[in-house]
Amino acid sequence: MSRSISYVTGSQLLTLKRRPNIAIIDVRDDERSYDGHIAGSLHYASDTFADRISQLVQQVKGKDTLVFHCALSQVRGPTCARRFANYLEEMKEDTEIKNILVLERGFNGWEAAGKPVCHCTSTPCTAESAQ
Image 1 (tube, rainbow, N blue to C red):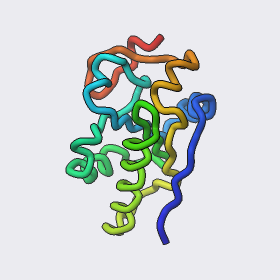
Image 2: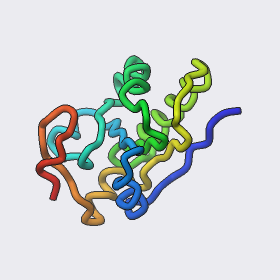
Image 3: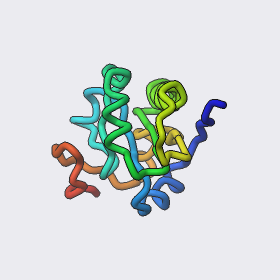
Image 4: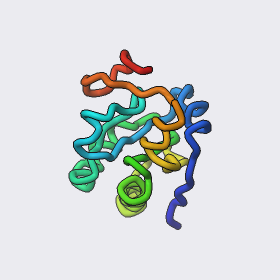
């Protein structure tokens, strides 16, 4: 049975983000470096996502909710979320992940709604410069 993927609003994500068992996965490519990002998000660019899925599985151990996004969450975000779900099914990965979500309106919608944006250059994000 394949995992379902749901959408989450920016306001819902702001509330969810306070939980320690959530990971936000930014699949934008180069624009992350100059547009900023959601504080604490992990960067797995869509153009190399398929090659790095197993690394992502390791990095999100202990998380039960993953939220994927790109700029608008119309193509790259949902595609990577589906790839990740399919990978878990195919590999029979034993993970705690129960929810795979996509951020409605993506990073652009998040930023336009006045939600906090981080401009740190640390990898992983240190969330020190979120505004």
